[in-house]
Length: 208
Image 1: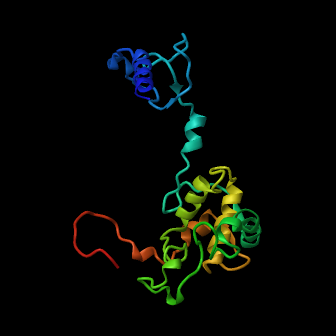
Image 2: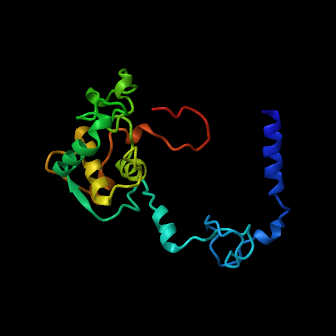
């Protein structure tokens, strides 16, 4: 085993060559983002760098630039009804989060305490969307990036709106028949909005 490790280390070191870091400066006006496509040191490698990669295209950057702000900035066009949402939830989400969002192999999504009591005595529902999340816009952002568990980022905007509609309804935050779109999500005041304070690093009592 020891001999094998020395051979492996020697192999790695043999592939290392000194590099002038000053050559790895991106010229002014060019994107510093790199898409790491191995070009094997061919003539079409970008100038400078390590002989691989290329500047990211606008389309590639746009695919990742999908963040949604608390005020709803960045929400895409589209909408879904609660009924559409519940149908989609039953087909794609219930297997992990339970038929009504209150139980499954993964996180509990729904279940609000009477009067939204705080601090929460029932730990099983303390972090549900209805009891804990301060912004509905964050729900859209998270679902679009991270769901479903086995294929994150694969949902269309319409499917994300449907998921959000279902989760909000299961938490009694939007009624049956409601249409959920960018305006609905941005304007919805979540029960826990005022339970969070900005971290200004000034110290003192900041827990509500």
